[in-house]
Image 1 (cartoon, rainbow, N blue to C red):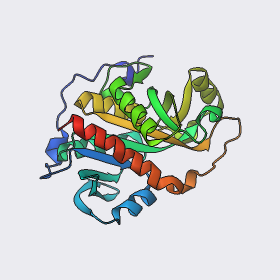
Image 2: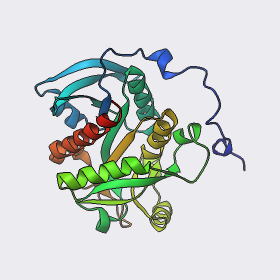
Image 3: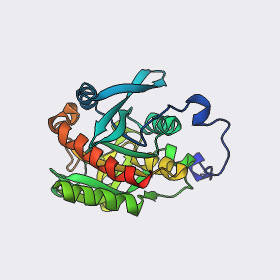
Image 4: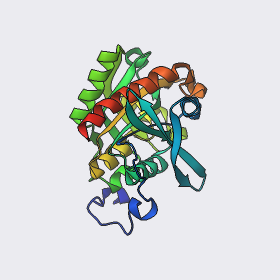
Length: 259
């Protein structure tokens, strides 16, 4: 049966654009960092040399955009909403404000705990089991990461002393429909993790030609037939400083590219 996902839409002009809804912000930092964890954002937004520079709006409420100085470089950051459509929309609007490059990080479900436990995951491709990416890129089972962005992330991880593993991830829209057969199939396809945004963010960033890096860290485990929540509810707060510092280090490297 022919579905919406089989229709090429990436080259069709849109009725309106992010620039129609979001005005540019004067002196907006060239690089923007985002994560999904409110505790991490709250922690870093209260630090010295950090102040609010803009606001992102949605029906759920207003989200502050902050600016901080890291190694004498201005970096913007904000909390992304969970789920591909809202996450991608905020990304589009941050670019309309003035961001020229972007770093995103967040937790994921581990499909191969032996390979991913206690390591940063460098996603090299994503299975497109969501909807947003099909409006920005032609239909295909997977979408590949930009090799230059993956190289920057690897180099940053190595220089900062992080253990990491590379591999595919599975982007899905339906967190409560991660079925056992689907999980087994994704493992066979080589997926290390499952999350809800990466395929979409790759598609949007490539469509807009915005340098984009995303890294993941394991939270819950789907490596067996019994789900293990682990530290999912902590939202990465146990390692907030190292995750944010890693994102800022990636941002420094991207900032040099977009000057």
